[in-house]
Length: 243
Image (cartoon, rainbow, N blue to C red; front, side, top):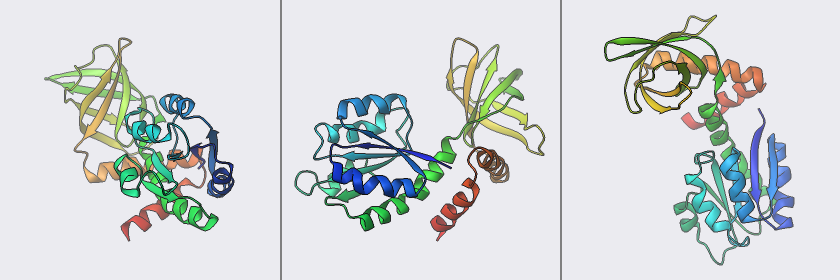
């Protein structure tokens, strides 16, 4: 699996230390030198890690504060880089940072920090992973059954096309079988979104543990095909979390 990161900084020494640390962990690195341009990128592009030079980049602190309101990166792992003079560690955590590093940053400290954060990035990647799939879905709502066709599925929901969508906030039951598997699901759901083209997104609710585990195992297999090596890293991440 290749993860994606964005570094917002004008500090060449910071980039010199952090970039190779990320690349050793198979994390691709994009660098942006201006806060406003970085904020624009974060609106449209998804990153597993966002590293913000909060104190030494003009507008950097505002980017960190606004990160959790961006649709694409509200759950990204955020790193605040501080210079020890302006923003406190506690303030950075309060603004949404998951990890905080103080300048000057050594290679050892960067290694420790990003290794500790890697598990969170991998698990978040699985959480938002969408597997394209076309299958029949029965949407049972107010005593009637609507026929739909899925377009993708994740561990937390699915998108479908259908002629008549329940209103947003409705709570139908979804019945479907994943092709070429023994996975059959009958789950509660709620309508997360609908559009004018007959597409809708459903969020799964109260999924039985056995069904959730089956779905997650199948999704892990699909991720593995796209990003070889992912299953081993997910297993390691979950093992460390459980201990």
